[in-house]
Image (cartoon, rainbow, N blue to C red; front, side, top):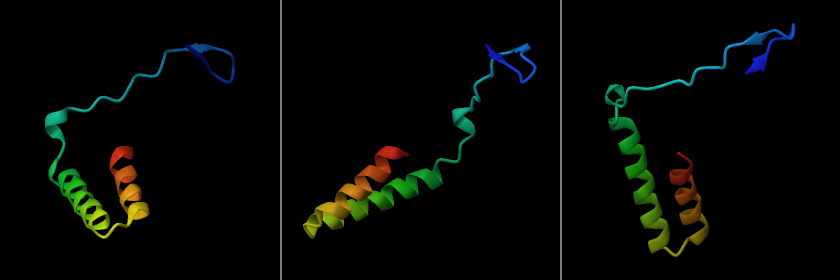
Length: 61
């Protein structure tokens, strides 16, 4: 429970729920695929720093 500025008790906040079937998965899939390609290219060119940066970007999403 949490208190309002007047020290009144209020209801706990309800979590936001999402219906997974209502999400348009095309955009996130394209984004992840693009990052995976960039990771592959960076690792092929032995660019470790860039590869790690893209990997981190995927893991944060």
